[in-house]
Amino acid sequence: MQTMFTLDQKDLPRRWYNVLPDLPTPLDAPLHPGTREPIEPEALLSLFARTCVEQEVATDRWIDIPDPVLDVYRHWRPTPLLRATRLERALNTPAHIYLKYEGASPTGSHKTNTAVPQAYYNKLEGTKNLTTETGAGQWGSALAFACQTFGLGCTVFMVRSSYDQKPYRKAMMSLFGARVHASPSAETQAGRDALARNRETPGSLGLAISEAVEAARSGTGTKYSLGSVLNHVLLHQTIIGLEAERQMEMAGESPDVVVACVGGGSNFGGLVLPLYRAARERGRTTRFVAVEPEACPSLTRGEYRYDFGDTAKTTPLLRMHTLGHDFVPPPIHAGGLRYHGMAPIVSRLVEDGVVEPVAYGQLDVFASAVLFARTEGIIPAPETAHAVHAAVQIARECAATGDRKTILIGFSGHGHFDMSAYSAYLAGELARAEPADRVYVRAAAAAATRLYC
Image (tube, rainbow, N blue to C red; front, side):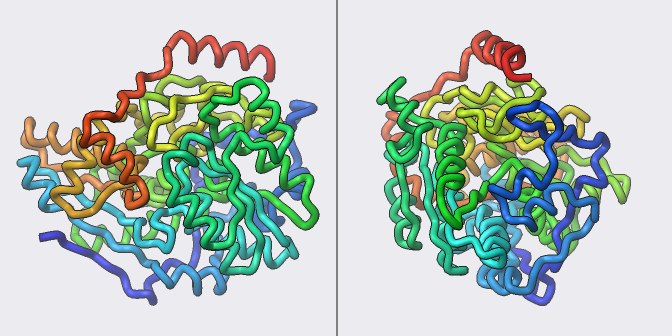
């Protein structure tokens, strides 16, 4: 029987945790896309809400969560911590497996944790409309919900491969009042240029970002909102790890291994950063495992260097692990993990040896997702399934060695809108999505370094 650990709403964290003062090595400054000099925070105000920019560079360890944001959070937070006892029995493992379940949010994923404060801050500052990109649709759904909540317009550029694969995500965004375009689109110059080069392109998050940024800069009363990568986004997500820390204490355990999927790094950072602080303060040794797809392996096969966040080279350059801003990954079903770069915070922690990156193929990931669904009755999103697969592998190692480890999974969202992917897998029709050629990835990264840094 599944064991659940829940917090009362009075225990909802009232502050986010800012890891920047506690990083082993400080982050390198973002660079201006034109001058390649360190960019001043004021230069970001044309795109982002002032409060988000201030949080991007904040030095305070704790940031208060505004009461109106807490009021919206209370619709689904605190989210439950579950122990996957049936999965443990199926694996015949001495390991204890827990999951922090973010599928309880109104849009079914962790993304709502940052969409709500970003919409709130923009509303306070008089913004009328927000633009954004989305891969699999979780982020677009979350921002559409948040904009509807605070009375803002919302325009979403959805990566074409996911736009075609996940029609119900598109329907959810439209239900919440968003305008949704397949990216590349004819709505922007960046999109038209991409279509002129290749009308059959599956699109990429880097290209969709270019379109959303262009639309924000050309619209009156319009700003841009990002669902991952940046410091303030990971900050908002730390409510996950702060709750999980208390819930693991309720369970009478502390995690030996924490696993979560990584695309841009938001759900991973949200779970891991507070637990990293707790482990360091208490002298614990904890493995933090970042799980990415073999088809888009920015941490395991990219390079750590400055690169643009978008294809059109309009964003500041960030020092991060990257496959190159023009990299277009295969159209795997984990659309939220098809990003060429990684959050600077997560990248820095990988470089410092705090975070251990691993990559898995799509078919292996879906095999573990099916096992999880059949034992625990919860269907993981394809992105989340990467974390599930890593946990299954670790639990099997424990079965072989007899080690009783405690494993915590960042369960970033449910897969109720991903039945086409599961249907294809069960029918034996899901493509393996061969990993990007190592020589190509390294050569592309080296070329980008020469051209743009």
